[in-house]
Length: 337
Image (cartoon, rainbow, N blue to C red; front, side, top):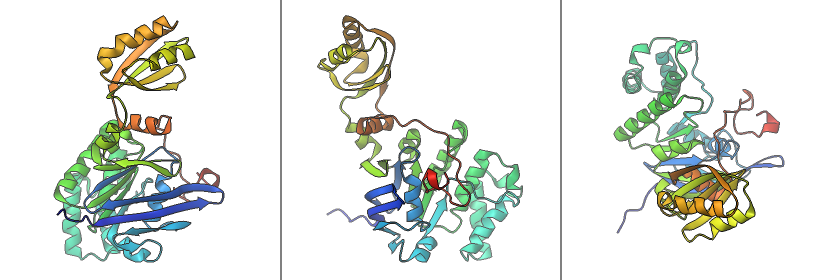
């Protein structure tokens, strides 16, 4: 008989409204102890609002959420004692050193001095900041500061770590450095991690299970492989077609190996079996229907394709919106975003 998994986070019917705007719409899911769980969706989908509810910064309009076995609305102090939070906005003090930033955090949680020193030294070494531990954070690069933000949230050894868009605004090299640190840390610790991101590659690289959220609602949950397996066809062929017409899309859709077609402007995304093998037949169908293929590309399915399949739209990476210092992330634009 399989052992029952222990729930680290339990969310049931959570809804959050700001006036007439529904930011989170009747969301339910569980996260198990030791799991790396990802919340994937575009900017404005409700990810930050939900993470603010789970970390006791916002009260839900309706529904219930329990984090580390405590109700977030009824026992917020107990929840805060068990969690670590790395918000989107960088909050480390620029006028303090890295060590001082982490030391203050440890003091907030009542950690003894000796334990603080050992823990801070270990974490700074893990992220390659030991040599810069006594430098002001104002002298740090964006990637260094982001690594500091993450380890600061780990000083007090939380049971659950919340990472809200942890690599937003970083260049690809810095982003991969953060991923490598998170992976190394997981190898030495069985902590539960809850990640929000709009980077598809990030969710695929890190998460054991992913919930895809769009317009405040969860549209699918599963491991990255399970979600990709749910899409018909094993390849996506993208054709840029001149003179695209209904006749052309109809001809493509009638081919036996074509499972589904999505159209964006003049680009046609075709879900097929054996894309490379069947590409000549696709191009022939376009030509015989009076069209011209301007360019063609083939790729294996990704979480981006899952999102498009489920919602009918792509999830383009956007620049992070500036967040009001007073209101913070989680409020809709008309309240300050």
